[in-house]
Structures are given as C-alpha cells and as structure tokens.
Image 1 (cartoon, rainbow, N blue to C red):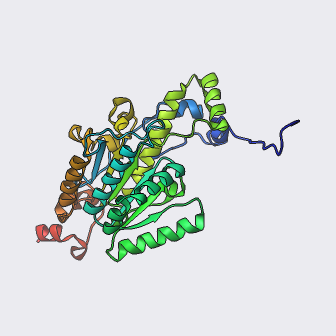
Image 2: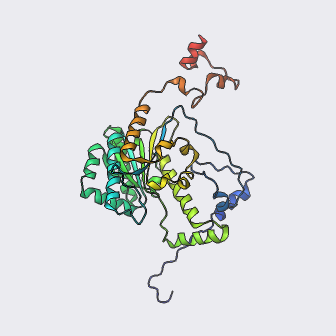
Image 3: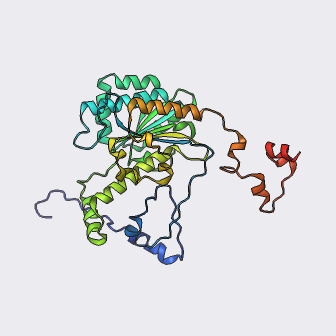
Length: 340
C-alpha cells in the first residue's frame, strides 16, 4: 500500500457456516453437543442450519454446583469491571478482598478468570502495592498464566503439585486464554472459580468490527446481542472448568453487578441456571463468603452409595431389565444384602 510502512494484511473468515457446510452436506444427520450451546438462538443463523434441539438435565445425586452472583463489596460499593470504571481503586480493592476471603475459605485449588491480560496485570500490580496480595498468599500459593506457553505449562504443573500436597493453590488466568479453553480443574484442583467482570471481546479489533458488520448485513444480528451472547458463552466455558464429572463439586462466582440483570442471566446454560437461587443473585462479598462456607460444609459430608443409585448410578433392576444376570459376588453391597 502506498504511503503505509510495513503493511500487514489480515485474512479472516467472517462466515462460520462456510467451514461447517461440507460436514452438513456429507452427512444426513449431524449431532452437535456441548454444555455451553444454550441458549441456541444464534447458532442456526451463524451456521446456516435448521436444528432439532433437545436439552438434557444433569443427573446429580446432590446439588454439587453453587453459582453465586456478587454485585457489591463488603463496603456495599458496586462491583463493575466495565471499561469506564474498571481502573477505579475502590473496585480493584473490593475485587481483591473478595478473592482473598474466598481463598481463605475454599480448600485446595481455586481459579480466577480475568477479562484480559492487561486488566489482570493492572489488578495484580495494584494488589501487590497494598496488603491484598500478601493476604492472598497466606492462604494459597499463587500461580499466574502468561502469554508464554512454556511458562504457563510449568505454572499449571506446580499449581497441581501444591493442591496434591495439601498446601492449596490459586491460579490467575484469562477468560480467552489457553487455560480457559482446554484445561480441566477437576476434583480438588478446582473447588471454586471466580470470574471477574464479563469477558467481552475487544470491540476495537478490526477483524471483530468486520465480522459484526457482516453479521448485521447478512443475518440481521444486532451487535450488542452477539457480543453479549459470545461473552456469556465464554463465561459459561470458564465456569465449566471446575465441574468435570458427576461426583465433582465446586463454587461458581460471577463477580460483576451486570450478571444480576435478566438479559445476562438468561443467557447462561440451563444446567447453571437450575442451581442459581434467587437469594444468590445479588450478594455482597461477606454474604458470598458465608454462602460459600455453607455450601462447602455440605459438600464435605460423605455421600452414601444408596443416594447415588437411580441418579448417577444404575440400580440393579435397571441392569437386570436389560436381560443381564449378575453373580451374587458382583452385586453391590446393598443389593446383595437385599437378595440375601
């Protein structure tokens, strides 16, 4: 380009339906499954297909998910990480006290997701200048994701070692980073996940602006609707990092007053909304910590074998109903005692 030094040309696919069209053309039926597909309103437009949808509830023996929406700090000042107010010292301090108090109450591993690397660096620098970071590290060892893959991999390994030895650890990550997209914090590696702010995309990106203009022109998808849909899907992805099996349990803390709005909450997957109580949609820091302690106390109680049969485990009658005969020594203790 004349007059432009060292120009860079970006190539980006603006229409996702082009990538999946060969799959739809080749197969008569395609099954798309995910825990973060709902609400599914925009997917048929984005991928250009007419779906038959079916939602399944999670089969759990107990309420092992506890979503909490924290809208204000202990000083009753609102928590809001929108771009215009996110650098406010009061808001940053209240986020620090929330993380510090949860770190002291939650056993084993805990993960905190930030909307961007820049904001994470800003917050950590501010906390380091006061007493907050020192307070956090009294409860848990702290590890931080960086944009260097080797450093992040090493941090994850040491994080898991700290959890395994009983010291407990805290991992700071970014909502659209490597950790949020594919690393599981199952069992004691993730007893709580905290999402600071809403992980919106960087709206000044030229590629994103081009995609938004294309979707507006081609599919009549409003810019605000798409950005909210995408951000809430990303938040759900982060929350799902701590629940990786039917016997797992964990806290899910959404730390921003905007999550309390109906337009945001309704875009969370049904399996999260199902366990989001009305009393937990407008909490202060101290109320959230109290609710967290109550939940963890309940989860610490042992679960009996009987309570799991018929929910997350098949009963003997379910197995025998398929024409299978079990030897007496293969029967579960409860069933063997009943047969005897």
